[in-house]
Image 1 (cartoon, rainbow, N blue to C red):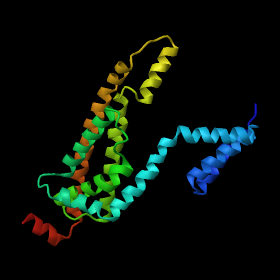
Image 2 (cartoon, helix red, strand yellow; image 1 turned 45 degrees about the vertical axis):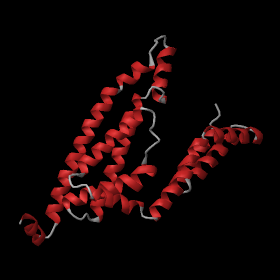
Image 3 (tube, rainbow, N blue to C red; image 1 turned 120 degrees about the vertical axis):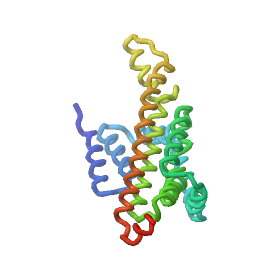
Length: 236
């Protein structure tokens, strides 16, 4: 058995340990493994070309980030905060639970790339969450803003990961169907997706409770850390 192709793994470990560019590290690791396995230069270039074509959809992210950055430069985050602050009865819990439900429904329909950390969380959901929290507990310090932003990102993750499993054409559903088909068990993709629905509902309820508990604890932390004069004025 030829163990030399495993040199690519060592290159990945060393590259990440040295905090080099991940794309460069993975590319170099692939080249090292290919050459160690005896692959010719022509075959290697053909493999890299096929990999690039098969994963060209990932380049959409490279187009999205400059657009989001330009919008942020012209005040997208500030406008989002101002817009959310105009809703009198909107709390952090209500806003994030509504976003969680929307994210799950869209993922169930296969639109899981319509939102995401780069597209919606950083430019919209995170500042909106900060504004919703600030109008109920007061001005947030840097630590609390980081906590709220992390909760917004976690909400997006939960909504996507537990919603996309209900989508019929999702890769995991097709993988499960193919696995059982190899063992002589015929399963309909719809049946597999429907079995993921209780898990999605449970994830929604559990994370909604986590959001409510987070807001309650944040109010307690903010109340305990405010100066005594501010607490007296707030109670008055």
